[in-house]
Image (cartoon, rainbow, N blue to C red; front, side, top):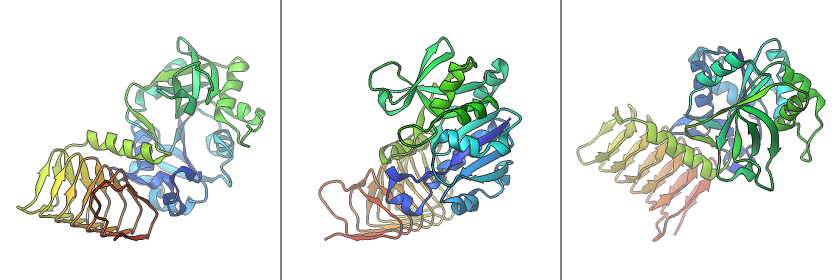
Length: 352
């Protein structure tokens, strides 16, 4: 079995961050989102991976390389425009044809391993198998109607309740999906939808079955989902203090401070993660905060946030639920109420 990992798209819901960043490389708990997918694919025993890329191709290539860091053999296929998931399948056909493949959306996080998902496919050998998750807001997703473990209908963003089982962005297909993707017409938004391709398989008598996610899953396409994913991953980590923490600092709970980080006269409350090269002075880092490499924070308080690399935050009070891009400078952001920021790369913010 091979794998198809999707890392294209424009990430419009995460502007301005995605003007200069691939959405799949935004760090969650100080690790790019895409790396979680690569790790999951490797643990499932798959070695050959085709990555679909778009305008951020060079950034993805620079981060992933040939895949050897995960014991994977990676090839890249350029999708010139984001014309739908089924279009991506057709673009990757030369890399995938001839055997089943696992398809994984690169901006999704699934805590549950893929090993059992792949194993049940191999045991049952349907033409398609989809990973479903129960959601409170099915109108936001493509949902599936089941008869036992057999999928009988798919509906994209239903306007009335027919199911609360959403497609999670993890699939296994046989080469029959190429026939389906070639036969469907673009949707109203001009894309070849994977839901339509799977529905084609159902309508033409192919076997489509479902497995259920029992642990957490997040589509990280929006700020609130990205922050929630950061909380989920941080909640799973164990305490590890490898950095330089002085006697005047207090580190409470499951905090990961990497070697090369320095904490001086500060409070860090876990779960939180501070990457190598960071300096934290006279500050409070509250739970569910990840601070990426080479960031300097002084006389500030920040919580429930993602701070990307090489930032400088000084005299900033009560930053909450924020996503701060690379190389951002924040100064004198002192207010009586919490401040929420979503700041693109290399911006400077100074408040009175």
